[in-house]
Each structure stands twice: as structure tokens, then as C-alpha cells.
Length: 186
Ligand SMILES: CC(C)(COP(=O)(O)OP(=O)(O)OC[C@H]1O[C@@H](n2cnc3c(N)ncnc32)[C@H](O)[C@@H]1OP(=O)(O)O)[C@@H](O)C(=O)NCCC(=O)NCCS
Image 1 (cartoon, rainbow, N blue to C red):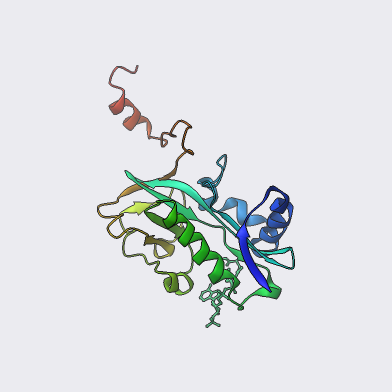
Image 2: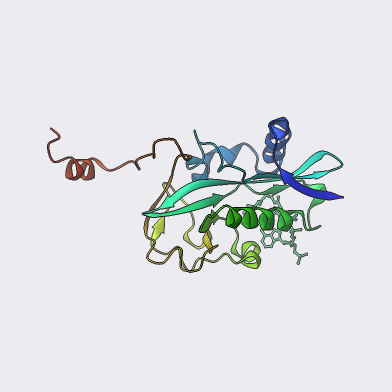
């Protein structure tokens, strides 16, 4: 029987093997990965699905911002092929969303298949004025508000943000923009 729990350090090798199986080596080339590189997942928001102790599913959430609006990025989500279509993926997403809401997060973004994620409340309705830091398909950039109105007026680059207590990362600016922000720069 598949159960959902928080990820533990000992789960990491099995999680990585599962992601290799689900996505192949190209998984590190996805634009979403640029928002995860060098960052830890949001505190308490990494989950695995297990079957008698074996890791058969994974999902994690990451702190990002869309312009001025803080949010979480969901992914990667994967379930072992032998355990698909049994509800594990849905249970992982629902647990992730429930715990994110309980921790006070306001919104979740992801790049994925709308026909799958619509059942959890995700749509592209709120993402038309946001963009990812690399190539992506606009109709696959989806959002779900955990707090109604959390993404009102959200627009701009989606970028990774640090965990609490660490310095916030400044999004990479074009040279002209840097000059505009720093008028005394040479
Ligand atoms: C997507 C994935 C996580 C779903 O996991 P799962 O445990 O099979 O999901 P659930 O059991 O909760 O839901 C299964 C349902 O979702 C549907 N579904 C699965 N992937 C889908 C997709 N990409 N688009 C639309 N529907 C999809 C199934 O057809 C099934 O439909 P049914 O309920 O009408 O039978 C799993 O298929 C997977 O790991 N895929 C490879 C990695 C991947 O694509 N991850 C998502 C990135 S967008």
C-alpha cells in the first residue's frame, strides 16, 4: 500500500534513481531546473510515496518569486511506472499543497501538463504575465492560489529565492538594467 510522508536524507539515492527513470538525463536541462540549481527545497515540503518502505514517488516544492509575488515551484513530480494510475501522484500533489497552505505559502507554480494538474486547481489563467528564466511552453506554465488573490497583479520573471535566514537572491539583470539600478556604475 502506498503512503505519503516527508522525504528523509536516506531517500535521496532512491529519489534520484526514480527521477532518472521517469525523465532521463535530459531532466537537468529543463528550465525549471534552473530555479532549483544550488537551492534547497522549501522547508518541510519534500515528500515521497512509499510502498512497504520502497520509494515509488517523489515531489518537492521550491521557493520562488514571480516578480514581486512570492510563490512555490512544484516539481519534479514522478511516480514509478509500476505504481502509476493508482492515485500516488495525486496523493503527493495534494499532500504538498495541503502542507504548503498550512505553512502559510500563498501560491504554487509549475511547468507541466494542464490536463493532469487542472484537477488540483492549476491553470494558466494567472501566468500570462510571468516568464521563466529560459525556454518553456507558455500554456504549460500553471499556477494555483492557496490564498485567493495571492497572484493578483503578479507579473515578471520567475526566479529562485533563498530560504529564510539567507540573503535573498537578486535576479540576473540585463546590463542596461544594472546600469539603470546603479546610476554611479562605470
Ligand atoms: C504524471 C504522474 C506523476 C502521475 O502519477 P500517477 O500516480 O499515475 O497519478 P494518479 O494516479 O494520481 O492519476 C492518474 C490519472 O492521471 C492521468 N494522467 C497521468 N499523466 C497525465 C498527463 N500527463 N496528462 C493528463 N493526464 C494524466 C492518468 O491517465 C490517470 O487518469 P484516470 O484517473 O482518469 O485514470 C506519472 O504518470 C509520472 O511519473 N509520469 C512521468 C513523469 C512526469 O511526467 N511527471 C509530471 C511532469 S508534468
